[in-house]
Length: 326
Image (cartoon, rainbow, N blue to C red; front, side, top):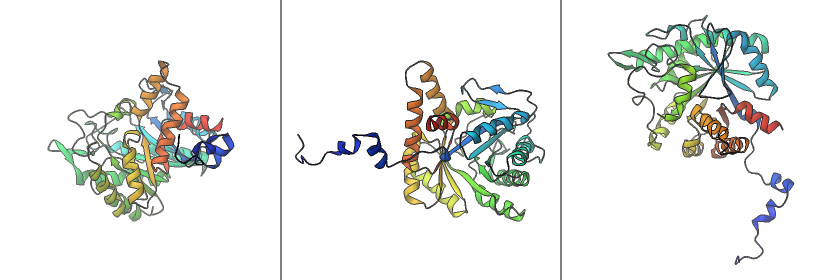
């Protein structure tokens, strides 16, 4: 028996309407950014085995997918491209006729400002090495890589992108991209950097989806060790000092502490990326009947928002929106 008989927190849980009034964290379809894979020279959409219900789309299929996303009340997409050919410098990534650039132009023409267009800025899908930067002397060359990332961002800006999202984890990528955009006359294009992108095993299904697994070595030399919270804060601080518009923590679910600490320390919008492995674990367990899929999706998304994320890039965007819209 409580020593304070008049204090019963259950009074605020006794009915749905009372619970709604005292609800501390609210989740909306407007919190979601939906990743979209677009592949060059693809004739029809292709299902991704490791990510059930996620597909790669041909350019001709993008309009229908964006239409579905808009109808669900989701305000933004993030484009990932798969080129038909790769080389050592990822030239398809900054080709003004590249697959992502064509997709941006097409979406802007057909949908105007009905959807915010974001695009990944990286090299892993476009280089033969599968690494996020350019290889010189058998290692990632940071300085030539960031100049290439700036070229990618400018090419996407010319196509009509709203937000570029560098994910390569190269030092100085934000300030170099910002200068490149400003010099090219695109000062209104925002940067959402993958500021604290950890070296994680949760990316495996994405590497299958985007065909971007490294062909040698690993990404430990440029992605943050999952053991180092202070290092993650230094990465976020560097991007903030370089003028980033939105910071991103990636992955999300195993890094809720990093999201919360970022919220406490920095007065910037925070995005969290609920990555492919988080998605695949839920889908796999649901397929076995071990969990109630919709309940788990809802709980995961609320936890990310509760930790401090202002927006969530998530493969659950469409299913989460359907749950919230019911």
